[in-house]
Image 1 (cartoon, rainbow, N blue to C red):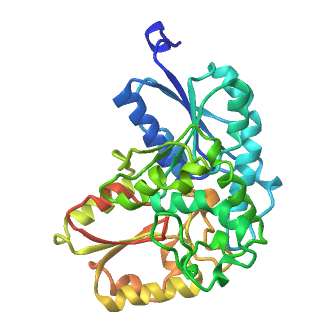
Image 2: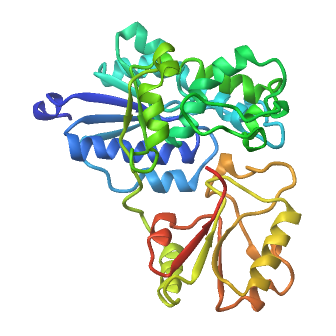
Length: 372
């Protein structure tokens, strides 16, 4: 039962889109609102009928009393069209879209909040917020520079006829560093695919937000943040007010037995000697890529921790939809003799590792990861 003192606190609902990489930063944001600002928070989690051991571990970790987790009705992923084999944005957007059909009734059940915070891919919630007269904010976990590009994307889409990767010159995002066409993310390289259509749909709705929280800060991105606040283009959209609130990082981790063993191994390594290799919450390599990486690590004689997942030639994010749930036998996916040849120098961890603890350890000297 919620006490009277708790009910007097401002109530904010937070809605991450589907996927651990979206849930973790908004989970941390929610905890900060509760602990540092005395706000009562309802975290509304998109779920499916497929288990995610990593998500379950995250949500079962200790939370402050005024943070309440509510799982939205699970989406049957068997009824969701599979991804095209390489990109997953369409699939998780469809899952999120299906899940948010229950948002209106959920907001009524938890008591209409004073504000609602989405991420970049839950802008469907704006419609419900408008109906209930609830201000909606966006939490952008990406850089200020990329956030500026995303706000500029609808304008670019309306003015450019060819594919962006065919442009002869870098793309000049107003007030920001130009973006070379070859550096564009996959989702904007082909404007005919559903990936791009979902992206442009959500980015074109960003101006409807009451504000954008950036997980960045002026000292690290002064040019891009100033552009978002002061450049005439963003004022003309008009872009919502931008609030740099970073760096917001995961402060605590619930450690499993495997996690503890991993950190104990790291304790025994020299200072600044270990490279941490991992490719996000769902990233996988092809068989060829994984073999090449293994050979590279072996020949380099570099100390390493490698979070290994089953390789797949079908999808670059093959474990995104069941992160932490897959059965993973490392020996079956590595070149013959690799584990013996790197024994004592490297540690192979199946599926999941305590990333924050590893990156903050004095023995860790480098980080090899995907761009996310």
